[in-house]
Amino acid sequence: MTLRTRWLLPLSALLLTGCGPNLFDRLRNFWSLGLCGTVIVVLDILALLDLAKSDRDFSGKVLWALIIIFFPVLGLILYYFFGRKS
Image 1: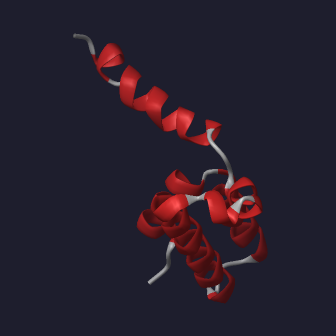
Image 2 (image 1 turned 90 degrees about the horizontal axis):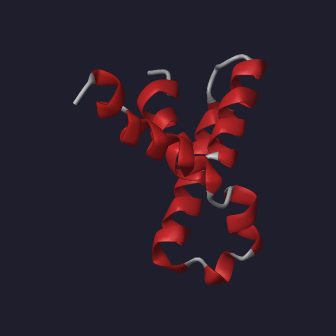
């Protein structure tokens, strides 16, 4: 197994996380989310509130907000690991 084929599956899975519903789609049908979807929506909203209170510049806030909105699960994980300033 070469290096390129070893990373093909995780990379494609990472890219396909954006193919699902975004935060707006999840909020539009809020009552049909189920437990997992509700937890994701609540965590995304908390991440957006945390982002709004941060001392980051406007363009950085907009970029992170778009990442969180259009990639609800992956954006949330990326924001909490890489986007938060201590």
